[in-house]
Length: 292
Image (cartoon, rainbow, N blue to C red):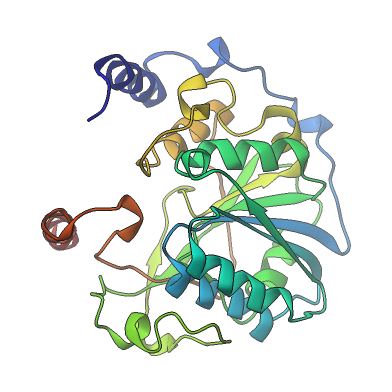
């Protein structure tokens, strides 16, 4: 059970991030004119978290093998915990695959730090050397033309944050869907059936679609100014820091025409460590949200 003071602190931060107080009370942003306007072959760091989702991460990492970038260099960073043996096995498998233009970067964190997503994102943001940093989730797939299309759109830009104008998504899949269940934890290179996905327009940057200018990431970190989002926790925490990050950045992001962006939606949130009853309740809630 959450500590009452921590719950109150979280509610206050979420209220602040709704816009009732200015973000300038917490952060001073660099002038956009001072951000580098990089052109040519850009460097992009993709930052993904994985806890008990190796069966989804396999599609993400496979997409870099199947559709390697030619107009950019990519560092694929995966934050994970030592207790997640299935993810460690998967990462070891992909580490042995050499992909032109792609550098694998596995970052192991204590699970209590992994469970608060802002901690890992902040550390990578502060130390990245990339021109742009794409903060994403492990259920996102970079399909044909995605990364090259993104690199083309980012040429010479000084935006604080951008995001894909749209995504291709599945319906809410249950655990027995072939996309999730087939040879569930066998490390291998896979591809998605794109016919199972439908296009949806995005209104602003979201947790899996925050593409941040490298200079901004290095200067500001990721919710570093809100200490609540930098404290380790014992269970996976709902990622409310995404909204707070947009508030701190002073923007919902600039939409870009990025092809090949896919996301696998799934009902059971295994990363929360729910028992079977809790999992069923969460699944029912997500089904109801899907219908609204």
